[in-house]
Image (tube, rainbow, N blue to C red):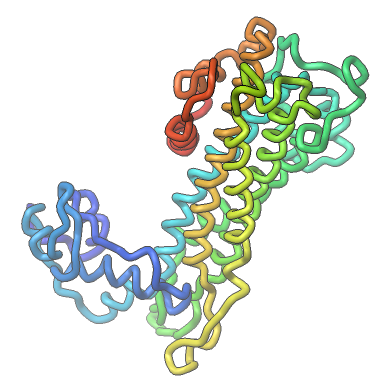
Length: 385
């Protein structure tokens, strides 16, 4: 391979396996993501540090090993490489991709819990939901109805109880609202990824105008919205977990232990979920409401959008862990009830995936590694495959 093309050299080095080492902190989300983007651009000119084939090298050496040469930047190119919102947007896109999987997993965990607790499916009736026609509510409910079709565990209003607690009855409303947030954030990121966020901008007419496209506020607000939506998946999931492990609410063995009184069962798993939910509440504080002046007060309002993107991804990862805990508890409840033959076919298929990672507890054992493995499965896999 010869000399890097003019631009986008960033793409060229990534395709070649050269990955700039970029600190995750240090951007205020205006004037562009100057600090993190500079750590990318500096590798293009043969400086800084990059990872190549698992080894951290000086930028020039990493390019050399990949058969590339540093570029010589011309007028405005250096500024164009660092004066944009690509760091917050890039992390935001990663967070959004994972959020879609976690949101789907939240629906799946709720469906397992409904099977475990003889949930009342009447609250998911399409005609009922049509009187409050947010499309995402029906989107969640219709999928739940399809997944639960054929179940002999699911009940209707009045068969076992009139209604379920909110954490079950309001799944379409709560999960649906988070899907609304997801859709909004997806739209904003699509616009941002196809925008020029440099400054100044050279227009097609040739006129050069200095503006504020480097300001990350559209992404900052979007990421804060995603943070709240993702935190809610965990909030309501942990409440369903409590219903599973609490014998006064479930009618099942305390903490889903095989030998209650002698064993703890999944008691501490609920502790872990509660801890993660509380941590999410701190992280969900909007980063975008903060601002601090920079550049001798010329840059007197900044977005903190990159902080918001990082926090969103952290909340999403925490939420995946909370949802994994709910799945494990629902699986254990079904095991104790010996209810496998009464489940919907879709439930049996998905339950098998959960149990390949975390089999039912026949006695107390450590499951922290299995909880994390299931969380990573949620974050990485196509859950409908």
